[in-house]
Length: 250
Ligand SMILES: [Zn+2]
Image 1 (tube, rainbow, N blue to C red):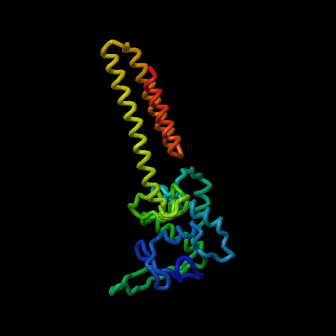
Image 2: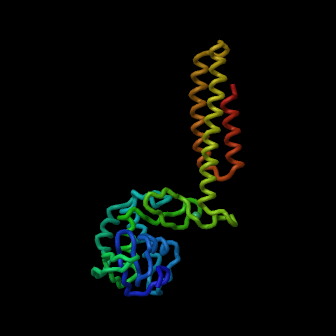
Image 3: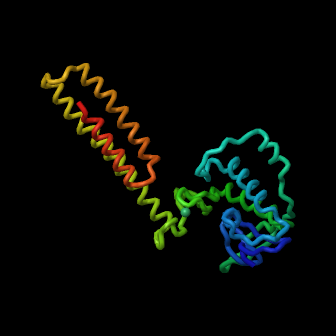
């Protein structure tokens, strides 16, 4: 039995942030919840998948918010806390010795009656250990964010790509955005130097220079904001071109 194909009641041995199912593993806490949210776990027809997904997302939002699992920030309400009070998992716990790599490990042996009970505990333990399912910023697919790992993109093939993963594409996008931000600052500094020199030579009044400076800083910040939202390279290029004209119009 593996985490993609589970039958219940299910016996799981937890030790720290890992677990074993019928001696198979170790799996990392959060792997099963992530696979479930990604739609990769085969479920019995009695499971209300969308309701369970919603419930897990709520748990994640409330208890895992410090792990930034979401691409969208959402407010939590008192109702949700109320709902959580009634959402305890049903399971029995035993202790067991697991023979692992020549040594014996003491594990907590849980028996879960349903998939929901298992995922509720599995996700909770994941959060306790600093792991959490996270949504890829590029394709929206769920992936497991491991403790200390700052990845915001998954490792699936990126949308519209044949080989490059979201992570590879994302790294490039972040890099390109950084270059664009640097471009806007470069344009601003160059124009600033030009008008400052003009003002020093007496070809521009101090008031005029001050007014230019205020407008230029506003134009620069607006361009940086527009670039953040710009989806393609052509639009970014036109924003940068427009900034260049605005900064040098005097
Ligand atoms: Zn992705």
